[in-house]
Every structure is written in C-alpha cells, then in structure tokens.
Amino acid sequence: MAVYKRTYKAYAGQLTPSWSRFTVLARYGFSTLFSSRIFTAYTVLCFTPFLVGLGFIYFVHSSTAQLAFGQHLSSIPLINGRWFFGFLVSEAWMGLILTAWAAPGMISKDFANNAVQLYLSRPLSRVEYLVGKVTVLAVLLSFVTWIPMLVLFFLQAELEGHGWLGENWWMAGSIVLAGLMWIALISLLSMALAVWVKWRIAASALMLAFFFVLPGFGEAFSAILRTPWGSLLNFNAVILMIWAQLFRIPLSQRHFTRFGELPSWSPWLSVFAVCAISLWLLHRRLKAREVERG
Image (tube, rainbow, N blue to C red; front, side):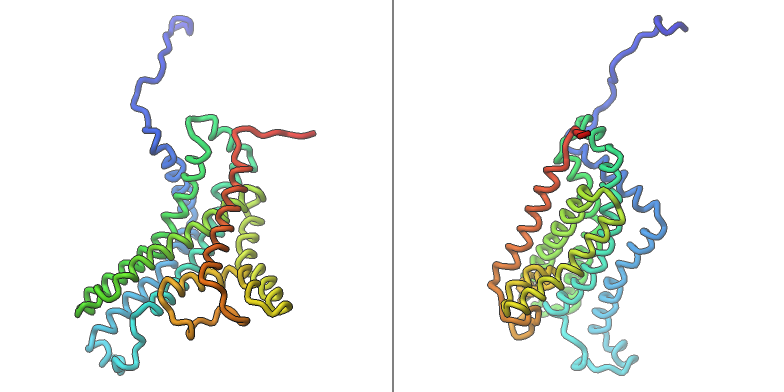
C-alpha cells in the first residue's frame, strides 16, 4: 500500500496517570541496578545485621539456646534503645556504601550525555524526575535500615510481653524518624554531587570524602580553637548525636565530641542545611535546556 493512502491517527490507548509517571524512572532504575550481580550480592549482604538481630532476640528469649551456649541471661546485653541505636549504625553505614555505588550511576549518565533534556521534553516535570530517581534510593535504604528495625522491634515486643511495648512505644517513632532523616540526607547529597560532577567514580569518591575526609577538617578546627562547633562538619558525629537524642541515650554515655556538648538543635540544623544546599544545587542543574558557551 502506498504511503499516501495510509491514514494516521493519534494514540488512543490508555494513558499513564500523571501522578505516577515518576514510577517509570524508578522501575527502570531498579532494573538497571539489579542487572549487576555484584550490586545484587552486596544488597543481600546488607541484610546480615538483620539476620544477626533476629538470632540475638531469639537467643535472649530462649532458655534452651542459652543453656546450649553456656550463657546466663544476666550476662546478655539488654534490648533497649542503645541496642537499636547500635543496630541502626551498622545498617546505616552499609547503606552509605550502597548509596555511593548506586546514586551516581543513576543520574550522572543523564547529565554527561545530555539526556535530561530528553526526559524533561516529555510530560515529566523536574520534580517528578528527581522524585523518580530518589525513590529508588529511598526504597533500597528503607529495606536495609528502618523497616528491618521495626520488624525486630515488634518481634521483641511480642516475645518480651509484660507491657514492654507500652513502655517503649516511643522507640518505633524514633526508628522511623532516624531512618528517614538518614535517607533524605544521603539521597539528596549523592544526587547533588552526581549532577555537578557528571563522572560516576568522582561522584562516589566525593560522597565518601564527605563522611570520611571532611570530619578531619572539622576535628582540626575544634582542636585549634578548642570549641565543639567544629564537630558540625563531622557528619559522622552529627548523625550519631541526632540518633542518640532520638533513642534517649544518657548524656554520660555520649562521646561524640571532645570539647563539650553542643546545643540539641545544632546537629538538626546542620543536617537541614546540607539538605537545603543539595536541593538548591539540584534546582540549578535540573533544566530542560543546556546552554553551550563557546
């Protein structure tokens, strides 16, 4: 049939709802990440603390297991806020490596190859583009941080009984808030670094340097001026200070700064400042056009 005899019509099929279009980016982001066997293996490895926690809670409530290992209940650590604090620390740092691996690859290639303009030329806003990318990280990190912690919390409440849940119900809110704060911080930070560097390896290195190199400058600042305020550049200590507040760890057991205690609001302000700067950097780079200057 000749081409001029064909009749062309607009697409009349079902359209994707506008509110869920960001999930398309998330779906392809998951498929790309888990196409790597190494990434899949490391993601499975991130569940190791959860399995250890399950075994520990079972051991605490099983007299048979205690007799088998020759342990007495009085010598076993209590499952309280400090125990969940330690569990969150172990999972969070494994999640940091997961984010440093996953985040730059999801977004840096789009900027390096000028694919962002193609995305935004579709019925997809800048916010939806960013939400689609962040959703991948948020889901991954949720399943290795606060979701397994909630499972352990309710398992402990069920096995302990005797009003344990009523006395420690606040801990469930602390688990969720601590996990979401951590996810928001490293997700926005990793995305902001990736869009400005445009090179995956460099973005991952900067992400790790933020948590392992910048603290050295903060501690040096504190040591020179003999002030605790330099610890606000040490985001390892900042995160630990916030989590210690949420899990109600006594001040006598906190050893995150060497030159005195900071006001309780200061670590929160530091985290909010990083998130705000990251959003501003993303706003500056996420554009539907690219201007080339010769």
